[in-house]
Length: 151
Image (tube, rainbow, N blue to C red; front, side, top):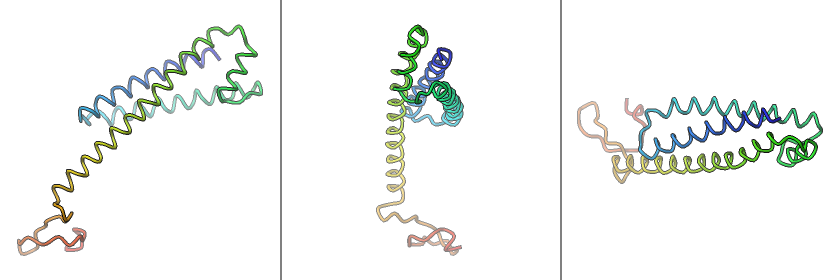
């Protein structure tokens, strides 16, 4: 169990680091590196899911649940596992930090989306209609139709 907890701590640390980098990129408006970062986040998320499954199986083998109560029960049954206890104590605040960073990054993304939506609406004008040119080269009033409707 100690090895699982230590591995999970290492992976969550890397995940937190990626979330911090993602936050910097989002705040700076630099989206070029976001796709590569998302791939790395997905890899770490898959690894964390694998570790969680291994922990679930190890706890289930001892008749324990995969939640905090199950881990507490495991520690009660294995009082000499100080290394595992230390790793678990390190993991809990890291997981909280990752959850908070992820929440904040989601809020930054929402703000960016709202800002982009407002900018698009401003470009389209208050009516929301896109000014297009007809086949005769004259400006067509926006009728809310799709571009392909006039083709």
